Amino acid sequence: MEMETSNWTTSQEFIFSAFPSSWGESIFCFVPLLFIYAFIVVGNLVIITVVQLNTHLHTPMYYFISVLSFLEMWFTTATIPKMLSTLLSERRSISFNGCLLQMYFFHSTGISEMCLLTAMAFDRYLAICSPLRYATIMTSKLCAQLTLSCCVCGFITPLPEIAWISTLPFCGSNHLEHIFCDFLPVLRLACTDTQAIVMIQIVDIVHAVEIITAAMLIVMSYVGIVVVILHIRSAEGRRKAFSTCVSHLTVFLLLFGNVALMYLRFSATYSLFWDTAIALGFAVLSPFFNPIIYSLRNKDIKEAIKKHVGQAKISFH
Image 1 (cartoon, rainbow, N blue to C red):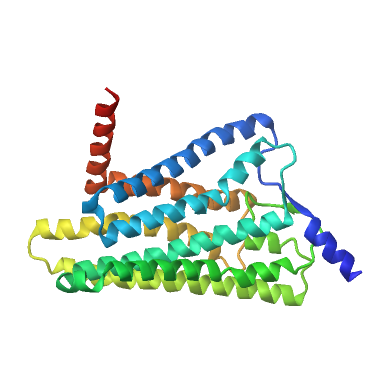
Image 2 (image 1 turned 180 degrees about the vertical axis):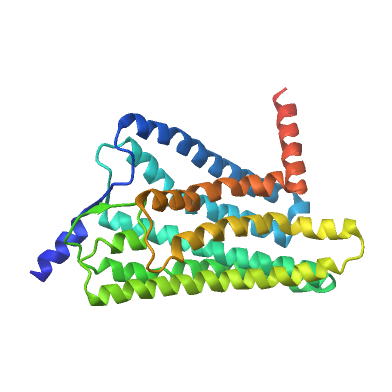
């Protein structure tokens, strides 16, 4: 009997039930989602290319921005292409193994981003609070080590949860009330016993510790930065110091605001509408705004993009 349950679990599929039911509504959702995904990929590729091609942007801050852009593309690729194909499909399903892979890459790239934003806060803290020592501390070697540490942390942290979920029996409904595979919606479909309920609570606590630790480190960095900025005598000096942090701080607030709504809920439950809205904010809208924030609010990246666009126009004429 146990073998039958195991085989049935690994061969089953989940049906997404949060997508619109009519073809017209599906197309209405498909078109803007396709545009957003294309913009995310192209926007982040532009940032990475511009940073690589311009030697004056070969600094720790822009290095971290280009790594963040790279992670952002893979973070959205973990979910949006499947959402797009699901909107056009009659059978809105995902295999059990496909669901596990989607959860793994969504969370591994998301956690890597969270760690990288913490490293970026540390970089801005050093640049503003210890400007004389900054160049000797934040070397290219340290940048590479911090990036590698962020990715190792991101890609290892979700593994125990994914491995545990892969062993659970799923004997009830296979209708997943979400727009992509995520821990809690999938766990709700498991044949929950006391042990599974305890494990769900442990998963909640692990996510909370990860999120709160990263948020506290970033907040502490910015408290230190604000204290130093307030002691700068000239208004122009204060403006320049703060402007280097605005983009990063905006991305941090946007990402962590959505993360808090999505994962710091503990026993609280939302309606399907709010679950879907929060998930879209986290997985789609936040990555959509990041290239805009980093390119439109950043003078150096804007000028570099204009220069390359100008060169491209000349070469075509």
